[in-house]
Length: 123
Image 1 (cartoon, rainbow, N blue to C red):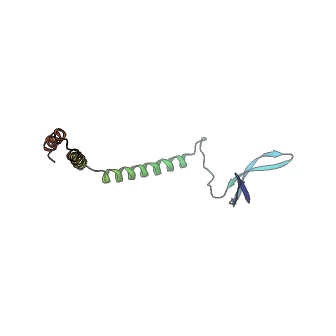
Image 2: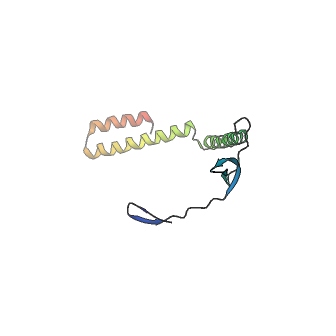
Image 3: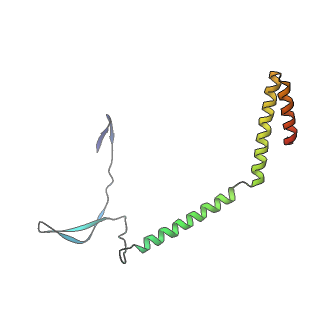
């Protein structure tokens, strides 16, 4: 099928869906008409108006994927000591950069303050 959107022409193939006839739903102008369902979708089994099997299957699948995702996140999560080491290294690199800028500008007062902070951080 040829379609146009904002002046751009493109081809679109609409997939055909095999339909199966369901139960008779009524009459229209003397002819029976039926519900039609796509063949690839299962006709839901209902009891009391609630589809129990689909709901249960969905909950079971949802629980399994949630547990798997949680296990993967816990296994790959960094520990507190790893985070502290990375944080300390980052602060030390910032202090080093600030010391280089202060030395380039010739600011002795700032350089002494940064040296003291460098010693306190034990970089």
